[in-house]
Length: 106
Image 1: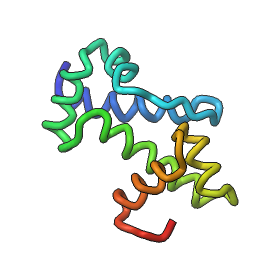
Image 2 (image 1 turned 135 degrees about the vertical axis):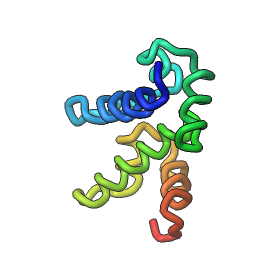
Image 3 (image 1 turned 90 degrees about the vertical axis):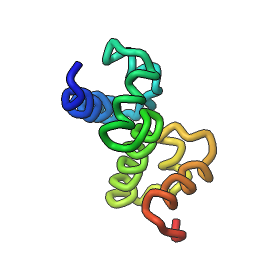
Image 4 (image 1 turned 180 degrees about the horizontal axis):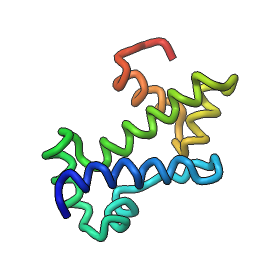
């Protein structure tokens, strides 16, 4: 698979995970790699070489972007959004969000 195709397809695959019936279905590295018919290690290596992130980091960034979109358009609490995004603990979502946007206000 060409490296440009991997990046384009990873964006498409992750977008589909987050848009199915407004229900968040948390993608795992294994699920995404299976969608590519590739090993998790190969997919992570390819993404790391193209965008400087492994598959898990790429998934986390997409989760945080989705959380940002939800925060901007709802009155839901941070805890509710964290659980919607399938985080076991709201603190995990807050930590990822703060690291991504270099903010301490959440």
